[in-house]
Length: 171
Image 1 (spheres, helix red, strand yellow):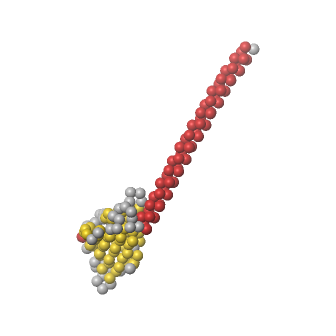
Image 2 (cartoon, one colour):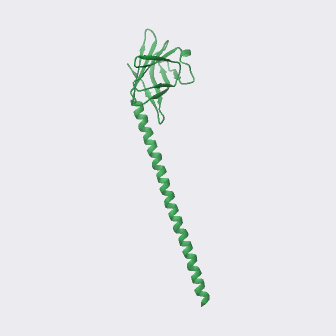
Image 3 (cartoon, one colour):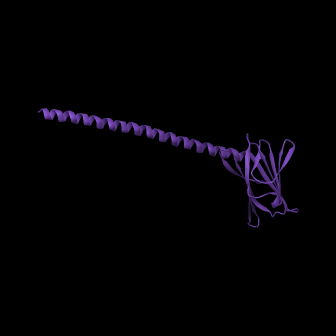
């Protein structure tokens, strides 16, 4: 009889220990799932912020182009109304003869026969290549000589959070 009471006491202790381990595992799982949920919410928030930043960035650049047929010259003008500096990283042009030109940081604008200037408060600076930093209110003017008629053109912009491609409107 003493043996049965002892085994019942040992079984109770072992059952209590197993119950405590199960309870600790459930508490650990709760904290882990709460941490995972917080990480997912942070990622979703950052993604939403990046998308919003890209939209605002795209809307903050007023960009257009004009093709002068007699001189075969393409004029591109982009004015920034962003509240902070934006970086123009590339220019892409689709020509009427189905060719494509992508100008980025690997090309020198002067060697391509392209003239680019940034104008701010009456002063201007010649640009020799991308990336080009445009501050609030600054204007980028690009002149492409001996060009065929463009079908479409776009500038790619970036900030610390987002990247956006802005199609140029024909004038």
